[in-house]
Length: 483
Image (cartoon, rainbow, N blue to C red; front, side, top):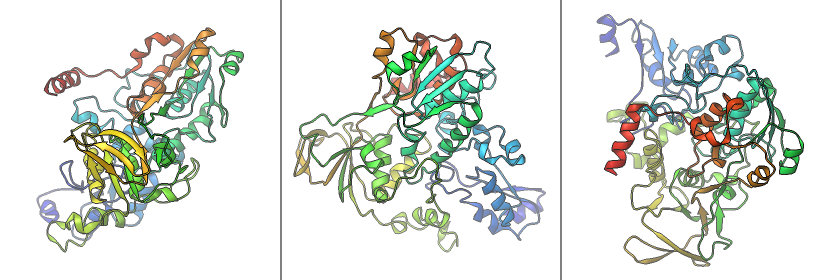
């Protein structure tokens, strides 16, 4: 086909791989960087026109590696320019460490597109809003305290500081990143490290006064004379709320992802939202026994192409029809017995991303995870987790570990004493709303508030949410009516 195209007059061939209906991931974060450049390389020598490699090329280093190895004549990128419109200028200036790297989450670009929303970017909320969201220098500099160095706190602090405000950022732990430090532990989500790396650089460049291992108190904040206090304190996991919730076998997702508690060989995960799926992926890969990756260390186990091809049954030799082997032959079931439970009777992971949810479901299916819906939780004892299934029958799941992923509540313990003393207090990120952990919303809200903090009031926080397009508003109304 390539030769026929060249003969017909084509002057260049871009080897874009797959589409969203494909049964293998092609551009999601679980796809290795440059994971399909080998396809382009197969055409080398068959045609004389330039060949372009594409899919999951998100850093200058990966692009140069593909070109230097002779896999392609050119590379194609799109989402990386949403994440950082100055990508090429920074690469040319040998400042790759300053690039806001695309993490291939699809949450604000492709997922938005398929929901008739404006395409933007999780790590760069100005994408698509360049004429509406401006970070202009302030003429009224404020002294601002930010409590919590998760995605929302980092976005607000660096944006406000670059505008000329004096920002002091307090973080109780010894590292920045918040929930992103958990996300990067999940197999296939190692790219979240890049956002932490980017914000670490931004803190230094913007002049944010960072205090790690510092738990801010109301008294210390009040005595420091801050004009405004931003609570980016995140969330606290919900408890199980049934008899036996204090049983030694019951742990929270934080216990698991921080490796604070061991996980047995048979596991029940309570809650099948995004966190439940991530935890299932984490324990299903046996990833709970290795040391935690610090925020200053790049993950050493990024998805590798050979392992990815094997996992998804891709045959690069084309020795089988269609280039795909049966999925069952590609990856054996996981070593752990895992139950993923939810109260709802509908599809597990119904709230996951439009372009990535199917990938997570397929991955857990290949690991042999048992998904059970419509259950009511009764109690936990030495025999395991007792539930009532959707038929009304009582069952006992004889598991070693019960992992609670049943949602979160906002962490707002500082709010009341600060308000009582007359402080101007704002809540952003998970401390503003914790119904679902949403880094896209957190970074967007924080950035919009930072762009206008000198004119804002805590009562007007709803105005710092990205507006829906008319088409998206109609789409949501139609979807709600059908539901």
